[in-house]
Every structure is written in C-alpha cells, then in structure tokens.
Amino acid sequence: MGVLNEEKKPLVAIVTGASSGIGKAMAKELHSRGIRVFAGARRLANMSELADLGIDVIKLDVTDQSTIDALKELIKAQTNGKLDLLFNNAGQPNSSPCLDITAEDAIATYDVNVFGVMRMVTTFTPMLIESKGKIINTGSVSGVVNFPYSAVYNSSKAALYQYSNTIRLELKPFGVDVIHTITGGVKSNIVDTRELPNDSLFKQLALESIKSRREMSQTNQPMSAEEYSKRVLNKVLVQNPRSFVWEGSFANIIWFLVSFFPQGILDWLLFKKFKMYILQKNIDIKRKSK
Image (cartoon, rainbow, N blue to C red; front, top):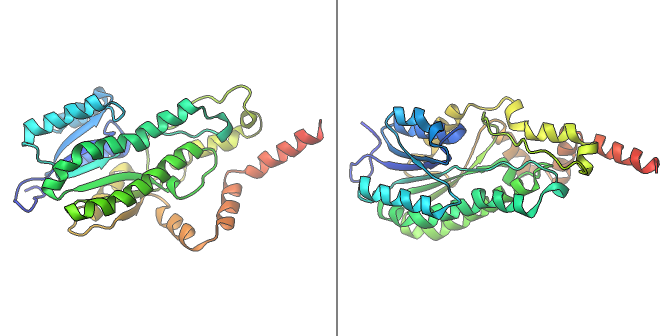
C-alpha cells in the first residue's frame, strides 16, 4: 500500500531534474513508497531506468514554459489534475571566478535555479492548493555560505532560499507546505567543466583552488543520492514538516558554523580551505616583479 492522502488515494508527485543524481534517486524513492511519480528532465534517454520501473517520464525543460504546460496537461489527463508533491530539483552548476562570469552565463544559471522553480510553482500550485500539498525546493549550503569561485551559483541558491521562505508564508493560508532543503555534499556526476578564458587572472594564479571548489561536493565524503533522498522524504512526508531541512554531508556542521560563528571566522576557514593564501602570494609576487 502506497502513501495515501486524506481521501485515501495514492499521492502523486512531480520531480524535476530527474535524469541523474538527487532527482533520479528521489523519483525512485518516491516510487518505492507507492507514490505515483512524474519524472521530468531534458534528456529522456537518461531516464530509461525510471521508465523501466513504471515511473512516468517526460521531457521537461524548466526554462521552457511549453514543456511545463505539456506536463500540466499530461497530469490533468492521467490523474484528473490530482497533484500532491512538487519537487523542484533541476539545477545548473556555475563554479567560475567572479571576473570570468559573463552576463549570459549568469542568466542561464538563474533561468534554471531560480526562474525555473518560479515557473513550476506558478503552473502547479493551483493543483497543490486543491490537495493541500507540498512544494519541496532543493537548495544548497551554497545559498548560506560564501564559497569562493561560485558567486553566481551561490547567489542563485540564496535567491531560491528567500523565494522559498517568502512563498511559504503566502501559501500557508491555502494549506500548501513549502519546504526548502539546504543540501550539503551529495554524490553526483554534475561537475562544472567549463574552461576559464585564456586571459583570466584566476587561471594564471589560482587554477588549483578553482579545481578544488568545482570538485568539493564529490571529494569530501559526499552522501549518496539514495541516502539523501530517504532522509529528506522521512522529514518531508509528515503532517507538519519542517520549513527547512538540512541534509547531506557536513550540512549540520555548516548549520552550526553559520548559526554561531561570526562571518570573519567563516571567511578565514574558507580562505584556508581553498588555499586563497596561495593566490594572494602569487599576486604579491607578480606585483613585486613589475
């Protein structure tokens, strides 16, 4: 018997970004709990495993409203418009130094990480109001910590944090819960591999530090996406869920640091972690050589 709503009918969920990592694991875990899942991603071929399990898969690009509308029509046809859970998981990495980010890069990142979530919420919340359902937005510790070499990604996740925090209040009178996950290290195959410009100041002086940032979530004992999904669902699929769920490797440690330590201490830890003293040393050497 699957998870039931108040009308004793199986729950229905949407998961975006379901072709890999957290999204795929979340779709599988929801399905294993008897919840009907509509899994969306841009690459259908990467969701063949989900389809084999009996999960409904659909081509979905959260930057393209027409594909979102197509999913809405599919759910109307398949479930008579019933929807209980919306997992906004689709995301785009962007780990580049601040001076090497183009406006186009920043817009593309925000289009997925922020505006994509807004499109999904605007489109599907009327269904969630009917079911008194839940919206779960996948955030990141990057939204609360100023990790270097990811200003755009950090700020997109900070924007998502505040968006979730605000709509949580706006939708509360309608009976819709909004949960924001603040995600630590989770194993994934999504790594930013874009090349830095040849004239980048950081490429010349801090390439190793940037590489360390890009691989951070995969090299610091990351939690498996499967374990992460189980833990999140255990906290979300309850009557009165927490508004913020800290999960993933080191998430609780980061919560402690940002809650009780001054920013100066955090800056010092980040400066040391990403070997920014080497960048500073290289800059000093270059200045003296002029």
